[in-house]
Image (cartoon, rainbow, N blue to C red; front, side, top):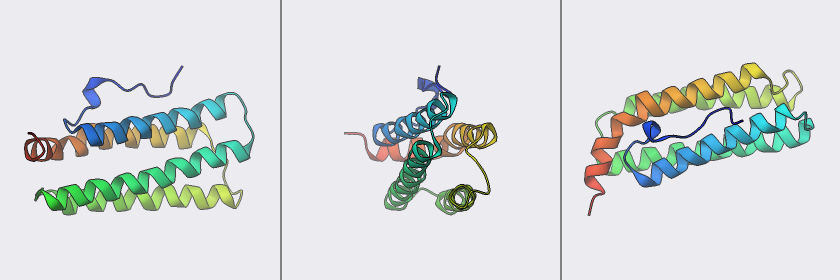
Length: 135
């Protein structure tokens, strides 16, 4: 059973970003699955690294599109991205230095943040980008 299941309520109305969000949800579920079946730290570490790297890539794409289409909430959105990036990189450092294990606490944090960010913050740019990107 997945930790987080994608459904249409997550859609921001921009196919490109919905696809990236689905990928982030998939990576979170991969991390959850690896932890749930007791895969080694190396496997969980690789999945976690992929999740971190893809998140940074996704944030850059979002910010670029928001800038290109003149989204008025760009600076607040960017600050939220920076805050999450700092938090996730802190977890990554702690994991790499064996100060923390991938745990239910980390999964809950990532799930809660991803859900909130898509449902509350990303939905704000949806109308601007969807209108600008329509044929």
